[in-house]
Length: 153
Image (cartoon, rainbow, N blue to C red; front, side):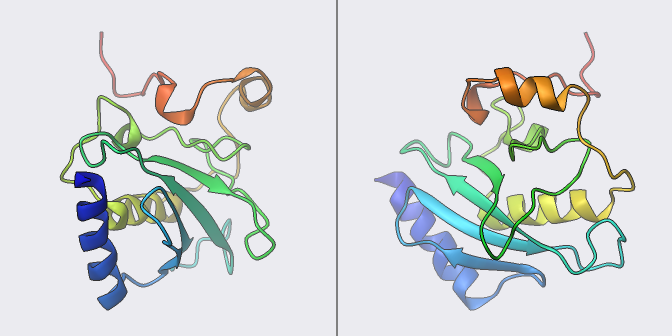
């Protein structure tokens, strides 16, 4: 119930104003939403491309991070090339990780973070081991334990 209440407030806020390049495509329920993002600068890797994000919320949102992936649709036919985005749409981003998540974040801040991540990208490539990861992974994105570059042990 808390998730639905929070998502209702987020949706109402987003319907009144969304940052440039970010739009709500579908938010018909409090389990799955689709958001389109477009890189606004002149990044040659993503020029004139729009990408679709799928947000899957658990009943424990916002205590638990949503599961966010890039998806392919007829209007968004590509997963963006990026060193932290696998070809199956799974995103390696600490903000979406169990350890990096904070309930302070919301759908808008996640979309803006991903938009910024794409804006700053200069490498037209996939993460190392992309093909093997996509072929072998059977875990849901929220259950994957990524190792982040800034982790120190």
